[in-house]
Length: 354
Picture 1 (tube, rainbow, N blue to C red):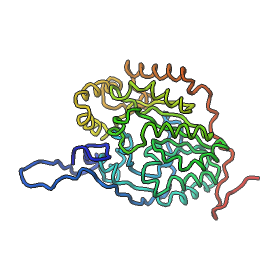
Picture 2: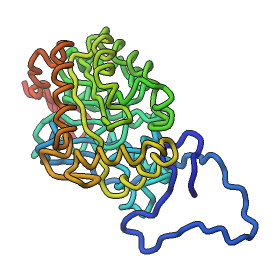
Picture 3: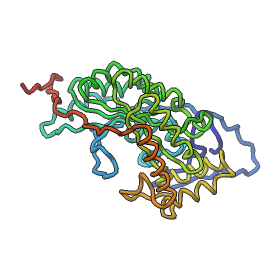
Picture 4: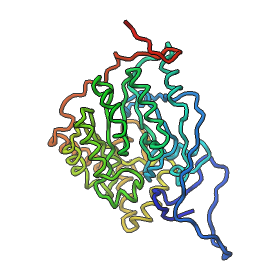
């Protein structure tokens, strides 16, 4: 199945890298049923034994995270989490956007993990791989259930999202913020609504994300912006505008990430370029490779987030100049408070250390 599907980012649905077989559509002249122009989302519960994931990457400012969902209906064609769908024998392409899994028992599992005597409180990141506020969250409320547990246990949390649904949980976020237990980062890729429509079709609009920043800031919830991913000759010219718009809305922190194309993502992104920017595709990939040591992707720690070479260095310099001019990251972040943590007991009550 190829071509543009309504509300979907990927234009192809290739087999995952662990699949034993691959299929290719060939027109043999026989009658074929008309291919639908849209695909409904399927959502299934995922049986999980734990919800907290751990990492020791020097490129990531957190050591543990929770992903309420596997797969993401936002449909960002560049998403570095797409290859994870290959582990469940699904395609990182259209399947990643339409065949989702959720941790139905996340709140109970989280309580059990936080109650372990060996647990040591460190901030948890929500949204490290897939967005905790993608559209299905409105109905399933897995993210809200997790936040309620974290609030009850006074556990610090960081959130990154492209979704405006985070404002539904403003009541919880305000309570967490009052105890220095939360930081929110809004990922803002472009201010161009038409580019957003094809690049990340089911995310909130650029203006909606700016409203999220302003609403959180006005409510006293610390909020920053992540200009990501920066894609050469696609959205990189907007870097300064994105930072200025976010700062004007109330963001106090900022960061950026260069486009990453691991595993199947490089083929999905190339197909997207051919569909939406065919005259620019070769130039875009040439610049990507210049920033990635001649390859489509550079997975090495220390360079995978920022890239190398003249183009990547120019992007870094532009970010630094704009950040300083706008007063972003001007005050050192003291970090979230881990001293308030109250471990749950087996009966669901909190273990208070008087």
